[in-house]
Image: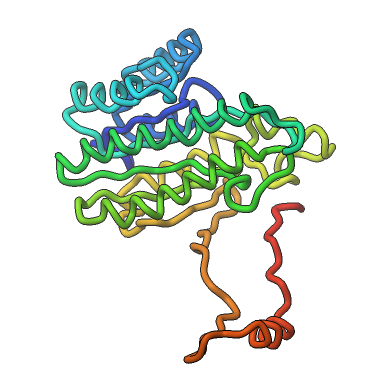
Length: 281
């Protein structure tokens, strides 16, 4: 029996790259899957690969920027397997360009898939999970959404939005026994390979694990071993793992009287600005 035996899962963006590895790893651990992608041929290949391994799988092609596609993903899982236990919001695109050069279309396209799509899938999955009495939603985030990344204003805004969505969903859905967590998978993918090539270092030297290794982190987070997790962000590269702390206040000053500009001068004169976390190695 695998760690995910009996789990009914939807994994968006699972026709290639890390999403494919997510699907294969979850299938090997016993999950029944609904997979998704916009490239029908690539999606069919992954579906065939999973079927060859004996994994119950159904493919739903289409962009998660469309409400009807997200609804179909959840409905297909419920119809095929009797319910939905885990929704993995993995699908994403990039249209990298520096802030001053980024077009409206490049910003909107990334937000439509990465953030609107995650919202639509979260909403549809949460409704089904509420009806059945439990469920787990996993947002796949990135360094861009947690600490920013040069040339990725659109992608960073979308991934940061997914984190805000997670924290809000935790507050709203806990009463329905629906948990929401996030994962930052640090993997060598089509998106990260240009960074590796430019640095003239190996993927591992850059902190990127191989997709099949990184996928184990998702398996663990989706399993009952992580059943106590809610509102957590797990990072994993196959060789290193950690939890990200939720944003918190530091250097707090409170007063019974209305704080004056002089009070602010005095307080912050002794405070060094907080450092911006960097993933640079």
